[in-house]
Image (cartoon, rainbow, N blue to C red; front, side, top):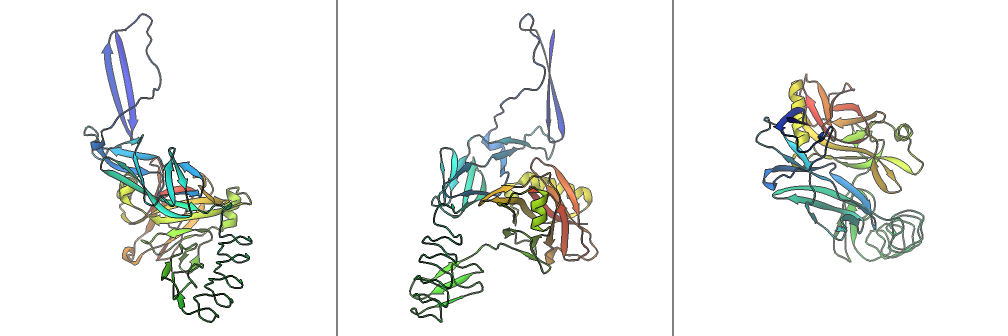
Length: 379
């Protein structure tokens, strides 16, 4: 004399369950509506882990929430290619360098400026993200105009400065009167080489030697170039599988369209996609490309965000269009082909973005703020 109906909608598929029985008590009307339940998944059933982003950022001395880790499971009763995605309650965490960041009180604490990796493990599956810790403005920093020590920027009166015109010691730039490792000064011997100037200054790789152990400093570029055009915004441009990445839309236009404050500026991040970290995104890309009859090429992680007083956050994903351009690698070029971009966002939504230029070696397209996985396609 009683019937119960259950409904689950997952990955585009509807599942129904029906139970027949007896009313347990007089006046029992049952439950009508949605109800949240807990589902436990065996570690052995998990085939991949993923996080929302590949890079997380904090400031020295500050804490942020640990990344949310999702686990994908492929139950045997699901259709081929189906997968359940659940949030992991308590993964095992490991920090590669605890001098830069560490886990305390269930939070991620920035210890000192630098980059390290954070790995989450569940059973035999792992997912690794990059942790960027920025210097705290209240600590010894690299900002111009201060008078503290230990500052590597012009305009300070302290020591250990790698910029010309100061009177401090241990200066690696020509024209000063201190003891240094650069030719042309009155210090002791040694030489400096590299495209970007002395070790410790802004530029490409530089090497110094003489009087101390050899050192090498690699500076992450703040701009990128595609087809001779430089990116309009600052950021981290580390995508190596394509021939350059740039933001075409002027930073002043982005700031206006996204209502950025005076202390905020657009900031972009481009990196190579790791299929092991986001298997579901790769499956979505392959499915969309197959529907288009297209071949998938290099895949990128792109984050379009803003920097607010040294703190990074994403711009809204439903904001005004931002134009980007990507250089097509020679290995993916093919005469007579049409190119485009498949964009997959968190939650599985996707879009096919058309190439807006007529250049044979670049793809120009428009997207919005936030994070996404972007794949080059040709058909």
